[in-house]
Image (tube, rainbow, N blue to C red; front, side):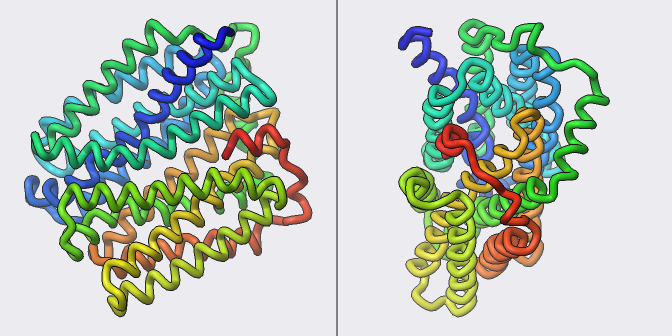
Length: 406
């Protein structure tokens, strides 16, 4: 593969990976206006985010094994087509129930893009080359959540919230054209898995029988739950409780995402001196402490918006250290079923994350419920890591895999 071909591939795969965070986050600045426009409650609107995450979770469980059997292109194109149709229908959603159902469909569609992009890299590269390519894609995945609310805020200057879904439909249409003409099949017939549903179920059973793997997956899921409690609740807290406008919210949200990305990049340096499990436990301890401080400042309103944002950004930085290391440790245990392991890991992360959004909204849309769920997610992840995951059984992480997941 020439350098030009490699750059082209990274751009295509990066765009495919970015559509997931864009679909999740672009409409966040519009959540309060959706609440008013559809005459519904804040909790019901937060459930539309939950729907997207549920779709992402289920979609990865289905598309991951399916792409190992029939190839990469067909599931990818079908998923993008699903995303386009769902986005167009969201533009005309008459009520919150319909919008929530369509968001599940959107999540199913973007799950195909996420899984297939990862699988294509695995098909074409190995060792250090795999690490370099995948690390660039992970940077794209980190940048997309920063840009998404800012893009959404910009669109809201010119259109209402329905225009954001129209923009997502246009993006999906562009991607399906690019994928159809610029991404060839990367999994030859000879390398495809056989055995049908039975083989897939056996792979999943083997993974679920591994206590350390299950514990690490739960750690990743609970850390993701803390992250998505922030994602789902921050627009209401920062705009309605603290009075930020849509553009100011986009900047504040982006600043938090910058901290998360900076932590993931700093993690590469930390890995030169410490093991992934040492970094993971330290990050969970720090995240739990920052979460408890967040609860205290939210309840007392001491320091106002400044202390709230400072604690939120500390939690995000801790998540930036925890989220890469937990998957690295988990994936290193099952290289023989990497695709299925990645699908299960992604499904649990987004599935547990999906539960955190309505849980925070169940007790209101203020800073205290959001802070309690964030702190609870980080504390639960720490307890699982200490009590469930047998540290002596973790073994070592392949160096290339550790770099690739950071």
